[in-house]
Length: 174
Image (tube, rainbow, N blue to C red; front, top):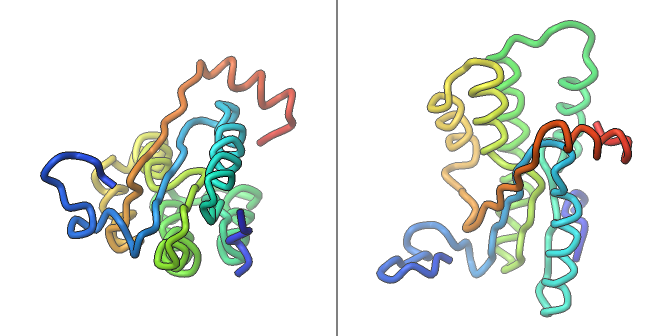
């Protein structure tokens, strides 16, 4: 496994390469779910397994998978005062565009397995629903930001919100 912050489809009749699902032999997997659901634990287990299989793994996260992303994350999470919902969605999209261009796509082009803690589904959920911007608008903005790049697999982890909150309080996670 390498720290990427510094530096297919098996359906019959589907050509994953032509559909844009595979980038130069790489594999793209995202993990989604609320804080405290266990994404980090499952990511750790997957990275370990893939490394044991001899795969080169790029583990990353959103927001904050690049220096610019960490600055945007800090701005959004710790800014005094409210950020307008559209501005928030645009800032997350800017982070994602830079992250994909500088971390995700290059790793895929090198043939690596990219595993990410969150991707555009989080924006659709948090900004689309939580900030009342609408699922379709946020999805379209996110797809524009990533030039259409979607993971081959998204793992959605689900847990009761109260149980997730209890886990977060034990680990000190935000």
